[in-house]
Image (cartoon, rainbow, N blue to C red):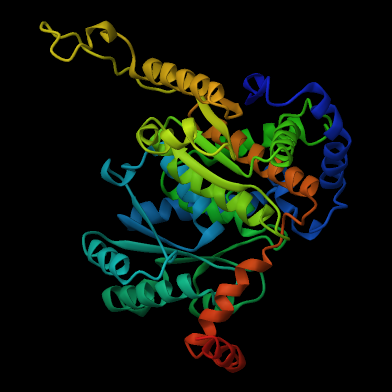
Length: 441
């Protein structure tokens, strides 16, 4: 079971400070458990690992098999929570080079408006048969809608109308939205984005499960890990609960003047999980001029850049390390007859063990340099433990947001750039917004 270790926080947070926040955390935890907090119409993720739709899940597995049999490339079209979770899990389990190791290649698009990226992906599509999983509750979000229009046209031109319909899978709203309407008209196989689950909490819904199952991820174990974590923490409102303890640490350190959290890991394949964490916490807590700024570092590589700031920079930061106790790799350092690089003292040692020493040494150095550090330790880097980690972060985020005094489940601030973009692109209905923007120039 995942552990959250606060031993390195001695000297930064006192027992009295933990005692002072206990009631706030208990109240926030109970609000989540009872469904009485703000945004309670978006807490469907809370019990999801135990109550998901088994019939739809069976269809997901069947569709995944069909995708693998009909295509060499799967394009996953979505933005924000519609792709970050799936990509994070895929790269964490299979590595950043997963598309180079054989089997179905999975590419994520529709998360930017870069013409260069779209052109590169169109060229790649010519190298294999292609299927599409388009993910959008409304079907009108600009970035994925543009990408879907382009790649749907590509499929129609390449395969024809009838065959292209068999290669498009839509994950969308149960009843409404333009993507739902189009899917029904065209006969695309569809999967449901639950109405009570926000995008950044949706990785364990069909949003994440279909592309992950198609890529060969063991989604049964992913869900099992999340379910076991859910059962372990959902009824405990005390600080013994690791999700509550993490929420308490975050809020206490924010109140002490630490405004930036760095989530670090010594596995490069964790990079996209860090991006998912940034969306989860940034979009949930960054409201009402409140909240920690979520940041990430991938060590040891970032020790040669951001490591300098971590060690000697402004003391506005604290660090949370995600650590995997076991990694399935037996790679060791070989012995050279002539010790030309001075590394024979490491001969015979596993790279994972050396990486673990580097991790421990770094945490000690940063702590001594005045950076509060805590550790989330997973037993192993596999689907079960990643499922645990996902649920840990989701629940901790909700409790932390309630403790902060915000609604962790809305994201009104995201709409500001969209409104301005629609106005400047002359979308009907935004004429007054365009006038306002042009007057500011």
